[in-house]
Length: 438
Ligand code: GDP
Ligand code: IMO
Ligand code: MG
Image 1 (cartoon, rainbow, N blue to C red):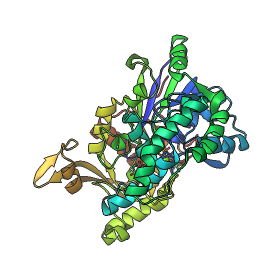
Image 2 (tube, rainbow, N blue to C red):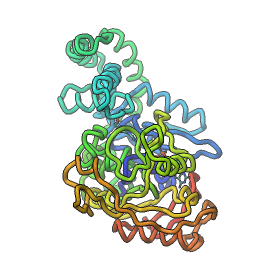
Image 3 (cartoon, helix red, strand yellow):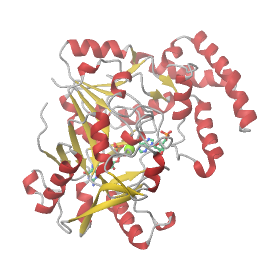
């Protein structure tokens, strides 16, 4: 039995949902370990496209148990709606287990997320405004409210009262926003507690028992390496540990439980929200030259690059091997799934960034200072494409056009990654499995 951590290797939206869904049937447990409903993971169910925000993508298979770990921040109203949506699609959520240690996103977290972005003006991060940052802030400040608190009305009321004595003052005095009463929060949240109670569990113990019994676990990451609070492009990051290490603290299993770390990488790069992005091909409205904008628009159009959670148009750019190498390093990637190779069939030639140049200096590795990343000029290699050849039907690596094979092999070489999967379309079966075993 192998236990695998699956993480995004770029700035999120790499296709984690698709790959989790593809391999989940091999695992007894599929566990989310960080983030919240800022995530948007797309899975295909029959002829329907489903967006999952909190539910582990493994919910699609009856044989695997979906688990929401302690490192996740849970908006209970959103989770309950997502469960209802899945049930309506004929997908059972009855096996779901939620850590009673997971923190709850409260209404004031969402207000503060939006208000703080407004305050930052031009310097805003471009958050999903789902209350993620403020909820993790309270967790670290030891002021958070956890799902287990919903199990005891007296404790929940007390915690809400204590929280509001500070939050209401901030909402009103700093941001001029409306305040909350203990009653209105309890009226909304205590019923959520009643609905979620049957699913709450001591999930760290559950997973430990599972490991001792020889069961297998897939840890499903959200966001991506460069959005990690420690290893990402701070402050243009999310507030959780999206790298492989987060799978341990976010679930309560020990490091020896992990056998493999699978990074998901697009064959190009996208980013939603603000922050440095060296290979970005800026849209005209963002100041891109006509050549740049044409490439950006083509990537966006062919890849349908619009956010699953917020609907925002994703920024697009060429594959960046500096980031690729960094992701291998900070996550200890043993494998990579390269997704959306089919999108590149629209190009005559394809550029790949191999290093950066900034003020006359070459950077082969992720620069120490963020300001370098902001001003970095990509050093590109240009590879021949396979334009016009439809690769979405390829199921074996050898079936890919020679230039597509060469592209994948070249990325492996310059990033030091072992590309075990190549994805050539959104469907589960539109995947080339190269050397994945479990
Ligand atoms: P996640 O957040 O990492 O799970 O990724 P998203 O679901 O936000 O975005 C990935 C998008 O790409 C989804 O619309 C997927 O259906 C789609 N997708 C995944 N793999 C492929 C692929 O190989 N080719 C194409 N064309 N689309 C893909
Ligand atoms: P998945 O799991 C892409 C980005 C936001 C913003 C920054 C902080 O689908 O890959 P937050 O709301 O988390 O405080 O926003 O992080 N972001 C994502 N970008 N995919 C995601 O999730 C993201 N989750 C957050 O756009 O730049
Ligand atoms: Mg997404």
